Image (cartoon, rainbow, N blue to C red; front, side):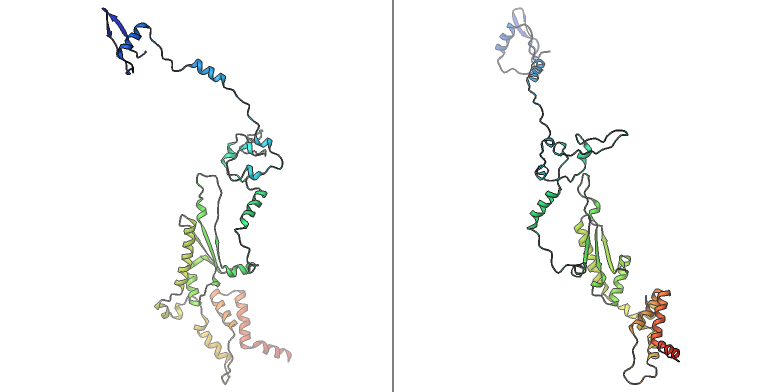
Length: 334
């Protein structure tokens, strides 16, 4: 119902039967006179459907222009069309791309209104001419390759530490991949100034992270959330291991031969017996010495165990030490 007050005439007097919900801006006397002239209720039409339909019919619709891909010339500068990474747009790509699940007996979905092409990241901006242009722009910020680093040996000599990390490109809500934080640091143990005691302690601390065949130490860190933090942690571990390996505890001087982890030729009676055999019957200060190869053969035989290689090497060194090869040659000549 209309909310205008209803004014009726009773006994020649005006009386207000219902009060309006909203206050009128004009005076009550003017409202009463105006309502007396029109006994019918005025209807407030808020929709005006007829007028709206008429306005809609008057809107002019212009035809859509053809897509940009159909108007591109053959020599189009693709770097100006697709300058950087962006979401796939079918009207700007002059290629018949198709992607999506293919039902049996049907063709793959085309590039128009293809959500699969819009979901994944694309590398349409990395064309050879654009890459060449970007490389020329970055050339002024680069320095020439050092002439001293011509081979891999030179690089390893001047840069003994190798840092390996990975970058990932994927379609996820976050640009960070958890695997990108992992850092691997490789170092050749021969580049560290370590003596026998320090090297032995260093190898015991690193455990299976050292490869005895290649002599390379590999430390992998992935505990910290960022790659930079894992790199700093790896460098800290190498520094701490190096300084700790040079620390010699007081109880290490009290170790006996039975407490040694490996066989050391200089600390055993094998050295004394070999020297007595070589120096037997020799007089003067110019006494013969034992070759270092004999020491290596004995240590290798006891530390690594008996096999064809160690036994053959030990046999050859004993023959050289006792000079049995000359005796056999003299006997064969006679």
